[in-house]
Length: 133
Length: 78
Image 1 (tube, rainbow over the protein chains, first blue to last red):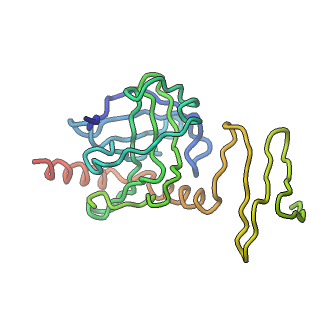
Image 2: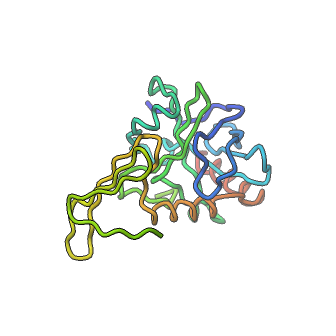
Image 3: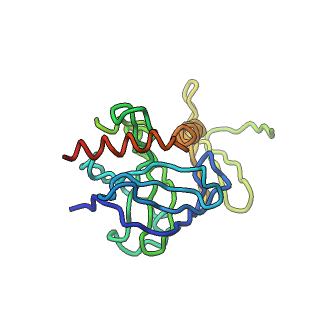
């Protein structure tokens, strides 16, 4: 049973910056609701910069990407249990207009709090998949 | 930009540990093999551009948008 909620982790370090944001390495992961479904990654150096993220399970129960060896090594992942996937949302005015990036999830090691946005090989996955299918 | 002509099977070495080999040429499609250490990210340029664009569009939603989405998620669960 995959985790459906996010644990409130204080500060995470991106081992590679997010494409498009080369100078932002440290973010705080904040829960925006009681369930820990909707969360935000807020930059420590630029508080105006915030990404909405969600764990995949409540929206895409079958989503189970294979994480490559380089990422496992970069994030010092020792077991699957310490991995939390986060999907970056592109918010629309409503949930129906909101999309999630399934092609490049943020992979977080909840133990070391290191993270990276990983580009998956699967070309069927889109950077803008409707959140509600 | 450095421009080199290579035949199928020939390679170009970049730095100490990146080797790019031309594997096949058919029409306007060239297949290249890339040997690089794991620390060197290799990505299709257009995919990286798409990801940058997607990340920029995702960044910094207004408070209003965030509260609206949070509320809709709550209603969806109830």
